[in-house]
Amino acid sequence: MDHHNRHVYYCPLRWGDMDALGHVNNGRYVDYLQDARVDFLFRTAKELGADDLETGLLVARHEVVYRAPLYFRPEPVRIELWISEIKAASFTVDYEILDAEPERRTYLEARTRLVPFDFAANRLRRISPVEREALSKLVGA
Image 1 (cartoon, rainbow, N blue to C red):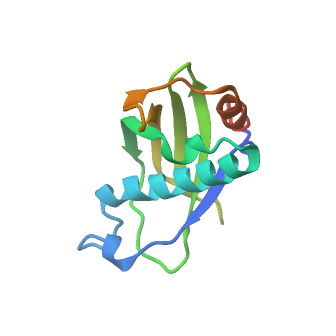
Image 2 (cartoon, rainbow, N blue to C red):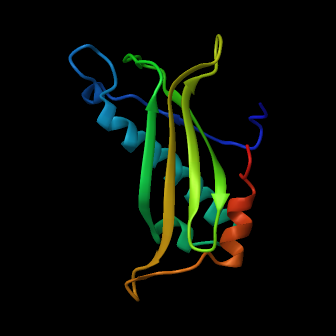
């Protein structure tokens, strides 16, 4: 599998994210995914001038598959994300939370469908050409 076309975010673990067994609490993973997604969108938006991508989005759907428990440690965990689909008025982000070293170990796989929203007009909107260009850079990783 080609992982070159993925956005990589290193997410620090917080002691307060752990359950009684020292695992990351399942509910905290959604926060980690959001941190990675915001990091990607802010950087991409800034580079390409697609400023509405940063803020004007609603989460329409989350799918999460837990693969292995992640124990607390001082090192951040690696999150890789990419765009799996772009439609006229939505796009889908896929993620993997993992360690790449010493061998690749996946803790979680997830998928989020996002819809652009015009908060000023209080309605859904279509993806603009500049946004499509920005998102297409991470398609099919």
